[in-house]
Length: 174
Length: 174
Image (cartoon, rainbow over all chains, first blue to last red; front, side, top):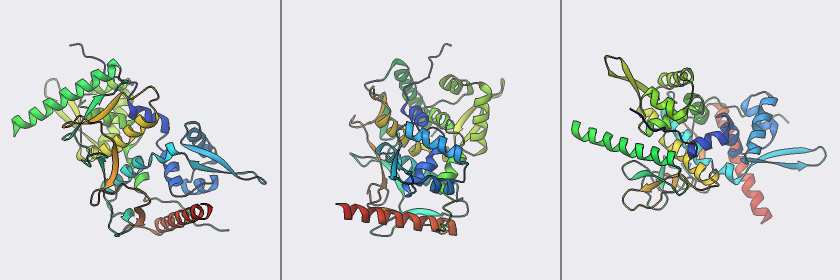
């Protein structure tokens, strides 16, 4: 049986992974959100070799996630700031944060978000901005966008068929 | 000036990155969400060498993100399914998806979520489940959890001081 390729070169997740670079670079982004700016601050926080930190910072600069800003003339000193594109990664970090707190903290939670006004601990969920409905396959589905190529259309068709047969299976077994 | 270390061994983001393994493994998780189950399906979708796919699948199995399930006795055939822990990565993938669509698709969007009922395109945002308020530093802040060690408490103190001085700077310059 010949099957169509499910390869997709224009998947936004694949592009994101590629653009952020190494996983590990997200910890630099995290530190920048936490107010760290200088090379030595990142180095101290992350305990890595300077040449490795330089390489990763350069990759973040090249991809437009951070920008280098001179804050002192003599001696010449630089700081690294998040760009708007870098700041837009906040939901990715928060989602990883929640997942880690839920699944990887057998000895208890070390850091959490609170509502400044009420002091209540926050439980972040992803919703549609318009309707407030939580993103889920009950309410939402993937569809091709205006720039979808044939491979992407094939994949989305495959997803819809699989999900349909999965829900049929569920119904027939219950 | 002596500064306290900002190192944190119990950061849930660092733990998450560590547990997922290589960045690239998220594409296997993505494929599993899309209904792919068999080794050859993943291989076709991801175009990688079998030994590399085996290594990455094994790491996902070891860390409890997927499970291996035998669906045929003769010949012995296996499929790879997401566990509850693996499925809980959906918000991480969706956040990466949105970020990619916003910043990395200069030629237009190839894939998007629609509301099944209304057909409206979805814009995912992270909110607090209780209040519905979007997660942001205006409404929320990081605080130590019950299991925070001293390093984590120091870091959170540093974050709060930095954010306070940043907002003070903003006020005085406006």
